[in-house]
Image 1: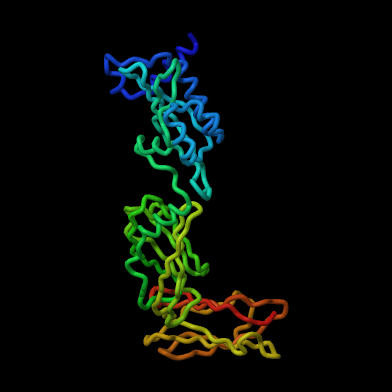
Image 2: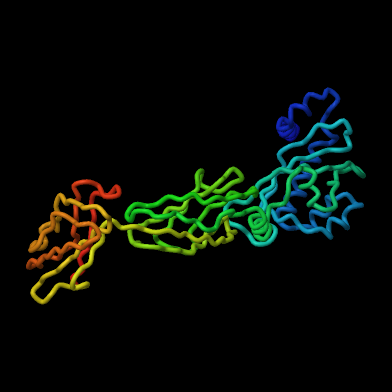
Amino acid sequence: MKTRLHTLLIVTLLSSSSLSAQADRLPRDSEKLIARARSFWSFMATGQRLKALDFVVPEKKESFLASPAIPMTSAQVVGLNLTRNLSQATVRVQINAIAMTTAVTGPPPSFAVDSDWVWKAGTWYVDVGDPRQLMTAAGSSLPQSVEQMQKEIEDNLRLPKTLIDIGTVVRGPQVLSEIPVEYAGKLPLSVENASQYPFIFFGVQGGSVSQKSKHFQLRFDTSEWVGDFSIPIKVRFKHEAVSIERLITLQGNVFAPVTFRQVPPDSATPDGRITVFIRNNTSERIELEYITVDGKLDVLKDAKVLEPNAETETVFRLRLGETPDNLLVLTRQPVRGIGVFAYHFRTGR
């Protein structure tokens, strides 16, 4: 009774369309069928193909042995279809499998297959010669290998635009640019900076490139740049252990409204003086609210205004026991959207 009850519980997993057919019944000796199906799939999951061969219909044993094994980690019988032919049955199995060649990271792929069984000579046999036929019959495919995934990504990924010109941007804030992408593959892809530039960052809406993606994002930190630039960048698209790279070029011009020049460039003079020339690179007169060195230097020569396209001299002197940090220039009105400009002193200390 206990075995019969367990069999009936398995049947409850079947589709409603199967259960609605009045003439459908359990296959003959269904307890024996379940037991043999469990044994067969247990041997398959543990790689014992010769033991699994005992459960294969006699006329297909040779093709079964000649076929490649399904690389799986486990297999569990989860369902038994009702049937009108009591000597034929369909057993549903949940399989956890690994890739056909190189293993990939993450949990094993899981999918269900239907295996056909026939009653012969007083017992049940699985009616399959090549186990891969089970995947075809179930409308599934074998888990992809690294090589298969690599090919899928290569064949389905395209960057319509590889020269990204952001024009002239103001130095300081991060600049966001959208890179067009066309992708027809099914594997979600992360995006990484393969060139490992610390000033380039990538992002994707939704977290990964998919068939719906129209672009991914590039963020460029302009704080360390001045003037024209052309930067080749390797973009890595990755799915689990598989990745491919594409080359794009980011070009443009970083305009710094205010720049600094220290004299001496890397230290103070013997009497402790540091001269900093503050240059206004715009064609407009810049009025200053004030400049500050956080009280770590004596200010010998201050500045109140920066003339257009010209340098203004400021002079400071080291204080005993103090190490200068930053010179901050605050403008009365924002200059190209920026109201504070900073310079880091170099003293050789």
